[in-house]
Image (cartoon, rainbow, N blue to C red; front, side, top):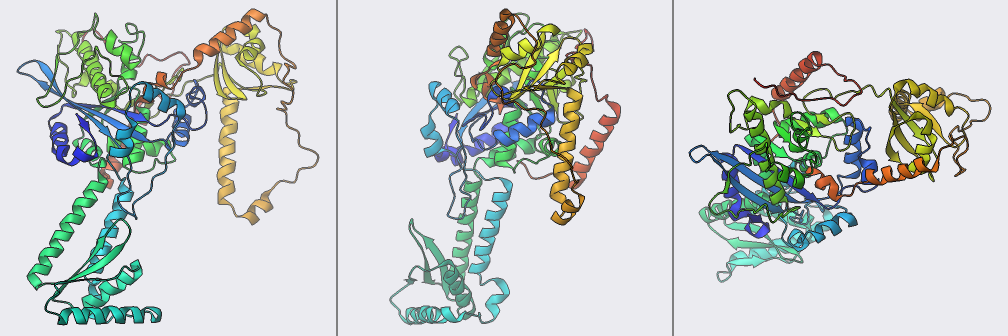
Length: 623
């Protein structure tokens, strides 16, 4: 079901009903871009830590707009042994509610816009008919503005009981207004008086003065046109005045709810506490919280706590398909290919039917990159994989519930794209900490290419390269004992420098500590503590020459292989699968409980794994 601004309000009850009835939801988002700076390859480096990946996405992806949100609610019909779906495709756009509403700035990435356009995406529906929204802070501020206006209309409480102090430069203006009102009240013909437009401060003085001077017999309200605001005064008895005040209050509340807009859907999903399924969903989750709740916190652990408060149960189908027992029988985990693979043996595609009044999707037509359709097939993939787990039980279980313990190992673990040895971000505990004692950090001139790195490390056998930026990369050796040999070769090199991964991490930590100290200390204290350095300071990483000074020699064949490897490493925005994209804050007691739970897990779980790719989930023959 397509939902835009014009039909959002009349269909909101259908959305709420679908959320209330559902066993679980699948979600998906479409964005105006992925990265505002580094390439997608650099944004998703193979040796990012979860903290680094979070910081990269927070810095380079959150200024884009999530402008289409797909929601598909799944409910199992036990009588007919089938899943009933209700799919929604929301177009979202931060249209300013009023002059005082936030005027949101966002950026677009040409490659992402071009890709969506090639898929038939309707941008007019976003910009002309998108549903508005507010995050929690914006909603709070707007409610305060409404309360202030209401208080102002009622004479600002105690101010109505005493004369208002009017500035000297406004006394003449207020006197003229009072004379007009006196003449109006003396007239038996006129029932209303429209005052000339004036400033906001003058309107406030008028409201306060009239509330004190005429507590009964008139009704005062501000009317707004496209160009200006003006006050209208009407003659009413007390009963009529109260009725109008109540009508105005009701209208204002409706306008406020309209301004909160699509955020109400996210609040309902969060308040349900039900399982939310996505595919490669880290960006979806980050954008949803950032856009409809509050700006993302600077600290990863705070993000984890915030996310589990908003969405208590998340499941990433890309991670599920990439781990045991699925990884050995699923070769391609992109959403489109995964959906096709799960229709084949040994999987059994689920029986699915759209609810009455909801359009059905045909997977044969492949409406990929429409958020509602992608959410729909994400849900299908989850059901197929969950049911496959059930088939391994003894006796087999043909339909696995979204509340089954079989799928609990996959809860609250979000897939980390292209990270070689940390497959997921763990929202409810410590992240994996592989040794990486076989990894080197290399800095080099900007002119270098992948072939240059392959040439440099030609004597060390098979290597893996993960670019960080134009002048640095991680290089993974096949044998950890070769690491020190490689480091030693760079001691006298002028154009490049090699250090161990541990040295790289240690220097990064020192840099962060120095930066933090710089911001905390006063300038005087910094000057006092600044060390006195005698003699010149030399940079060891001089990279003025584009040549390969001090590099090992290599056959041309290896260089060409390196170029091919680099080409195969490059990924497009479309391959990111649109890197699959609240409720009231939880009480302090529940937050503390979550912290305690996390502390217990940290004590009980090992915080490190070997440098070999970890097998996360083994499903035995019997449970």
